[in-house]
Length: 230
Length: 230
DNA sequence: GCCGATCATTAGTCTCCTCTAACTACCGGT
DNA sequence: ACCGGTAGTTAGAGGAGACTAATGATCGGC
Ligand SMILES: [Mn+2]
Ligand SMILES: [Mn+2]
Ligand SMILES: [Mn+2]
Ligand SMILES: [Mn+2]
Image (cartoon, rainbow over all chains, first blue to last red; front, side, top):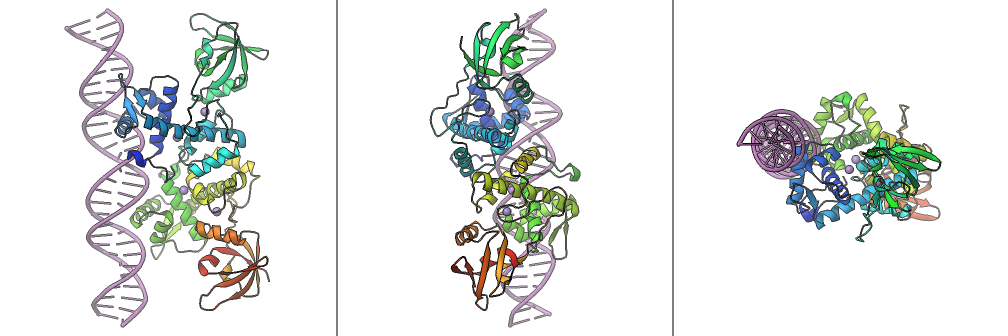
C-alpha cells in the first residue's frame, strides 16, 4: 500500500484487501462468472465471513451493489477503481515477464503483492518503458485512461467444433500449474490450435499444436479463450 | 507484504511496520546516530507511542535490546533480519534507478513501499538482472549473503580541511530535496570535490565541483560522506 | 535544590483484517 | 410436509497498527 492512493472519494481506505476484492470482482464479472461470497472467498483465500464483511463495506461505500441472488456487482464508481487496480496488476505482469523474464505462471502472484505498493508515478514509468503495452502475458488487455476496455473473452476452447482451427487470445491466469502445463504444450496467446476431435459426455478435446496431438480435459479447455477461425 | 516471509523464528509477523523499524534502526546505528524513540518516530512518520510499543514488541521477540539511555540496539538476530530488509531496499533502489531511470531522490520512497512486497525469488531475479550490483544509487553497500557488510561511512564532507580534495562515496538518502539539490550541483558518489574554504562558527563550506564554486551549509555537508584524498 | 523542557511510556480508543462457531435462508429430493 | 445440504450472514474475538491525552522520568539552568 502506498500512502497517497486513498479512496477519499468514498471514505474507504485503499487497502490491499479492498483492492484485491475490487479486482477479483471485476475480473470474474468480466468473465460472466457468478460473483458469490464463496467464490470470492475461494479466489481471495479468506473465509466467507471475511468476504461478507468486506462486501458490506464496499456496498456502504457505494462501490458495489448486491443483485438478486446475493451476488455482487460493481457500481460505475467501483468499476472505475477496480479498473485502476487491474491496470496496475496487468502492467506489472507485463513488466515482470518482459523485463525480468518471470515465467507467466509466476507473474500473477508477484503482481498481486506489488500492485498495492507501486506508485502512480512509478507505474507510468513502467508503462513508458514498455512502450505502453496493450496486453499482459496472458493476453489480458491493460486498461488505459478512461477508454473502453476490451474485456472480450471471445470463445472458450471447449466450444470450438471438431475440425476447426482456433486462435488463442487469452489464457485465464488463476491456476499456476495449469499455466505451466499449457506453456509446455505450446499453448499461449498468439498460437493457432487445430481441434482434431472431441469425445462425447465431457470427454477430452483432442488438439494439435504444431505436429503434436494432445488430449485436454475441461479444466484446461475452460481456461483457454480465443476465436474459431475455420 | 508477501505472505511467505514471516519471522517464524521469533513469533513476530513480518509486517511493513516491523520491517521498516528494523531497517531504520540498522541504518541509523550504522551511522552511529542515536536510535531514540523520537528519532525513530520522526524517521518512520509515526507518533512516539507507536514506536514505543513497536520497540517493546521487537524487544520481546529478541530482535532488539534497550541500552542505557532508552536507546535501541539490534541483537545479532535482529541485525540479520534488518540486513535482509536493507538488502531488498537497496537492491530495489538500484533497480529502479538503473532500469527505469527513477531519479535518486525518488528511489527511496518507492523502495520503501516495494521492499515489503517483493518475493525472495523476484529479488534474486532483479539481482541477477543487474549483475549483482554492490552499491545502490546513493553509494550504500547492498548486503549479500552473510558476508560482512561494508557499512563504512568514511568521513563526512564537513570534516574535510580547507584546501583538500574529497572523493564522494555515499550520500545519505533521507532528504529528497537535498538529494535533488546535490545532484544539481553535480555531487554524487564517484565525484571529486575540491574544498576551497570554510567560514568559522558553523559557516558554510566552500567547495568547487568542476569549475563552479558553491557554498554548502551544515545540513548538506552532513549528508555527504567519502574520503579526503589530498 | 527547584522548575521547566524534553523525552518516553502508559492508558484508552479506533479501524482494519482475519478467524471460528453458530445461526438462518434457501432449495432439492423424497 | 419434511429433511439435509449448501450458501450466507451474524456474533464474538483477537492481533496489528495507529492515534491523542495524560503521566512519569530525566536533565540542564538558575
Ligand atoms: Mn493484491
Ligand atoms: Mn494476467
Ligand atoms: Mn518500507
Ligand atoms: Mn539508498
